[in-house]
Length: 123
Image (tube, rainbow, N blue to C red):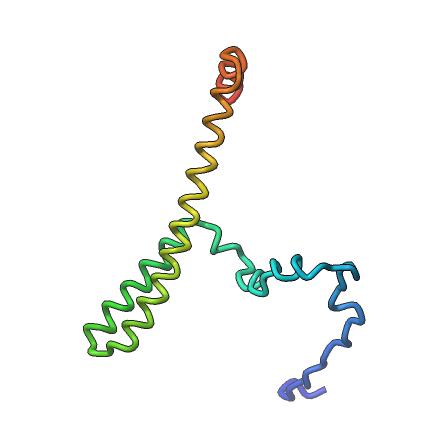
């Protein structure tokens, strides 16, 4: 066989059960809560507060650069993206504070002996 010759692309056969079907009796209220963008971020970067903050700062910097280059439309576009990530950042921050607050209230409800045991076990 000639090594300089390119191979043709061979496609894979389609899987018959590619899309799995859910239960047949799905209510309409349940289908409304299904968000079509759930698979958008596959690596979970929108749930990591540090990644969200970094992305927000990136878009703010891009907006400043676009404004200094004299492109107000592009600057506004970047600012809208930064605003989206700011809202997501605030949401994650609030969720984290609620978790911390909830765990703090659980410690207060436990007897002192159990709290001391937990602290000694974690140390």
